[in-house]
Length: 331
Image (cartoon, rainbow, N blue to C red):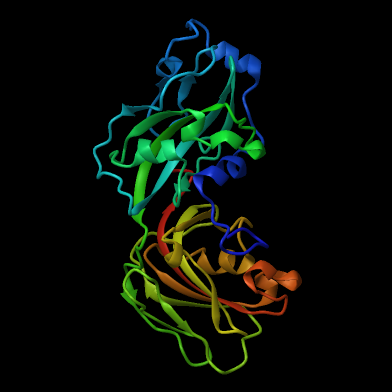
């Protein structure tokens, strides 16, 4: 859920590349320097010549040959973790560095190591990236060298500078995982109700049910902790992973839900990456909590609203947010 946009615009690893880099990239000359010492014939499987060194959780040193990329999808577990295996029913919280490899040059197109905050790998991943990560143990560092067919396909991705014949190189540090249908894990306090919406448990794996009262919507932001998690407090600037359901007070209808997509949502909180109501309402809550947010337009999508989601500029919106995990830059 990006600020001023429908909440359905959740960050995926593919979008996160552009969102997290801010346009930073390695120059062609830097790429050539990193490739010193490589020599390969046109028929060599150059994907296997990519090397990665460095400690888990720290920015990796990646050496890519100064030769055109060639070969089949190449996956290597550089550091073997000891955690549980990642499954298709989970999303991954992890760090990554990604490179575009075109001809004899390459450039960095995305990295979380510069910010110190991870990202969330959820939803449909690039085919080669999914093959590389599913089944790996948490705590692992994985190298994945993706040919075009296993990356962005015949069109590439011009938005992040990936051409239709480019190879994409990922290095991923697998930190932890969350279940795609996970919910709160704390002590029940309230279901809301009265002048506020009532939030009750829905069908298992499909999220809570939000019932809007017949009264007028509050004019100010309302925050109520419904389930109190026993995890650490969320602080400003942390990367959080949540489940949420959103309802428009006026229509009493849902406009978005991570539960329906089976894709948790990740964002940095308290720094303006999401609507004000989220920044104000989630900082200070504890991991494992379910929080009810009743958000007036001033703390939501403002006078423009979010027409694509059916939200008018005068609409109050309601969220039930489950905080699944949080990570800080000092982890």
